[in-house]
Length: 459
Image (tube, rainbow, N blue to C red):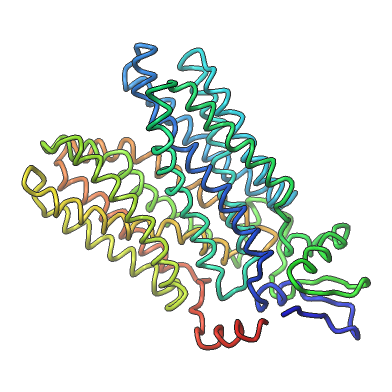
């Protein structure tokens, strides 16, 4: 039902309209378009790993020669998360998101023409900048379009599109790679984001909460609110009383007296969680084949780990809605610790394939549930003026953990196989649980009965 601002007052609280309003078709379109950008983010993030064997054959390169190229992508992600977060808070989530999509799309097309490893590494750095620049702005944009009662679920469902995109990359590679080669796969993987970027330019709206802080864009905000079902008078003055005032977007703004402890705790949670996540991504197949299991089992194991992550992330969002993030997220991290301890005690080898695969699905669900829902937590923690900056810098801190996983995972496997490897994972997730427990501003539980009445009323 449309909401009409009272004619007696020209002051319109945008935050109240968004937080308490209905989740209508226009907001659903915005979330769907944003999720599409994250899907293609997931596609392009996985292409290099898929084509490495083919490039090795064409160029006669060793597998170790690709380590710096993989690292360049992570370094680009570190830079992109922070830079695009600041850009999103200054020029708009929509503009920063579209620019990120067009950047990683064009650089992936460039990778299809790379003459050698050095050029591929440079291009992959800029692909990483675009890839990681998209996610914090996507999380901020969704959080500022969706009513409060649906927000954590919507942000999580958007960010979980990254592993969905990664699966689509594998499906795309099945017909393309053997028939047309790795250059064609890169070209297709770059053209898709360019096409999506053009669609976003045409259809994706800017965040109403971002527009509320910029009087010169209030006519655009009035049109946006009208499409959302909120009619406002032409003389409206827009405010957002539900948001705390923030200094102009900068990393320094995250370290004010009221935010510094939460910022550091969130950075710690991202760092240790991505250390655990990427330890699994990077080393589970090698760990399984090193234990004497067939390559098919290794592929099944990592696929189960990823599928568990998708299911776990959605379940985690529902748990946050029911219990709040202060209870749900440390509990999921503690569950991951317990699963890692169980895997540490299991025997890895032929004859144990089913139990190993099932437990990899369980731990993948729990670790990824925490990792993906941290974007929703970050979007909740920070006010509009520094929301994208806060989420972006936290995810950049997490990329340091991802880089460390390439070395720490190898060291653990060499030191003691699955026993040392899952001890590393357990310790990392324990640190995540502690970090989450130190955060003061958590997502509250949703009063399901009250939200049900609000939805029925169309408010």
